[in-house]
Amino acid sequence: MKIMSFKPGHDGTVSVLDASAAELLYSYEAEKDSFARYSPVTPTSVLDAAGRLDDIPDVIAVSGWSKSEIAGGRSVAAGYYGIDREFGTCS
Image 1 (cartoon, rainbow, N blue to C red):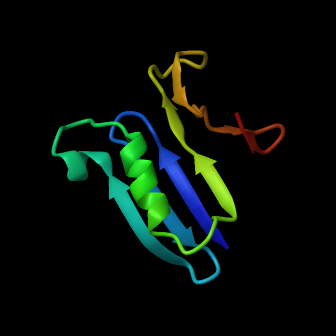
Image 2: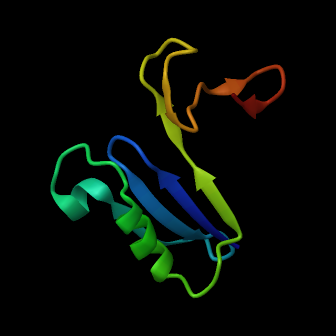
Image 3: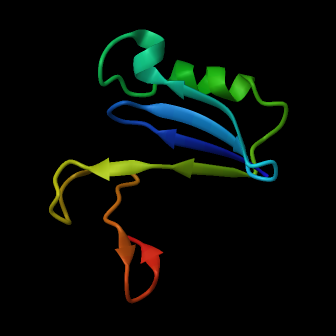
């Protein structure tokens, strides 16, 4: 199973994993590609990453983060506030 994952905002990254083989196929880091610090993933980076695949990924995942440590602070992309202890899911 191939998983393509994006962290679109600050220090953006596009990564592809082959979960069946437990192998990282590649990882594009926007900051490393453009040399500009804190760079986000651009549409060009996404297209470059997708162009390296032989087929469509089984899973496309989007990461994120919160601009503040307070739950309810403005999130970037998917946002993340940890594990919900009652339901065992991410919020």
